[in-house]
Length: 329
Ligand SMILES: CC(C)(COP(=O)(O)OP(=O)(O)OC[C@H]1O[C@@H](n2cnc3c(N)ncnc32)[C@H](O)[C@@H]1OP(=O)(O)O)[C@@H](O)C(=O)NCCC(=O)NCCS
Image (cartoon, rainbow, N blue to C red; front, side, top):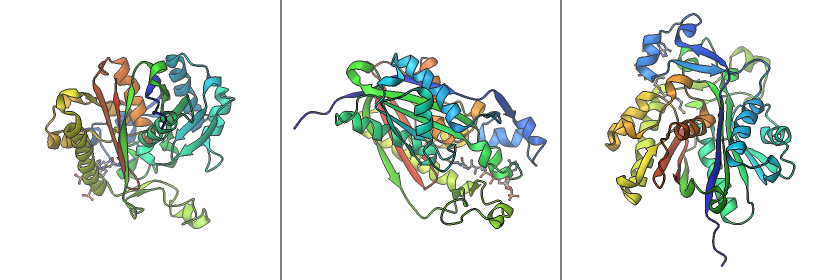
């Protein structure tokens, strides 16, 4: 049997739109307060895409930064995977537009829909394809414009989410020289359509006058259920890594940026100090599939990815679907 090709991350990128939507701005459109939002979530502001931007425009900016960081031309890419639940349109895949805009002339592409776990799952797909020798260079992007499916009259959801994109270029560890892929996990528990979903627009509830009137094209969420689920799986995922590798090996935890209280509760359960977590939730809110790669790039810029130490990325969200990505930097 031929051995597996070790995989690494050659480049990281991120992009967030210019426009900031602060808690004070939200106080003017919905019955909420800065104090409530900060206390319950840690979020102070989030970014909102301009009207002329689509998800692939955000993805393009993040991808260009990641490719520049990787010192790789787009023509070298074999595959483009875009993790998103708010693509440019239901089909064709946003990855096809992104590949075209980038000039990735040799690449195939597809989208991966796993909501907040999207980047973590897509990264494992990419790494597996490089390990097997099928492909050499793969771009994985997590990109979302959640503001287009948020109901700004529903205070339960509209305060929590924002727009953005993050990207990673995977290649052989030999070429990348850093960010060794050590594995991860992908889990799901179906039947949770009512907990966190965009109910209409698919085959279950096709678009109709009534789905529009009932505001079924906007995101719906049962917050408390999601909170408990998120704390439980976050703690389980990190504990599994600690058991296998030991606490001393872990450099930083870069979790899905869901809610500061979820992160704090999980870290308390695990028994690890908060300074082992990288969080930017205060500035961007929850950007779903974009949250982990945006945070990963910012952790890199902040010098939080320590040479030789583990980077643990737990993610969880709609499905319910959850999993983690594990790198050695
Ligand atoms: C949504 C969330 C912040 C609510 O926090 P919480 O501590 O559970 O909220 P509480 O139970 O203390 O309060 C709920 C009350 O606050 C109200 N409320 C909800 N959003 C509000 C807002 N933006 N401003 C003011 N009040 C709000 C609710 O209407 C409810 O009022 P009621 O008791 O009169 O019905 C929290 O459950 C959460 O973060 N859940 C996870 C959501 C998430 O991250 N989803 C994405 C996962 S990928």
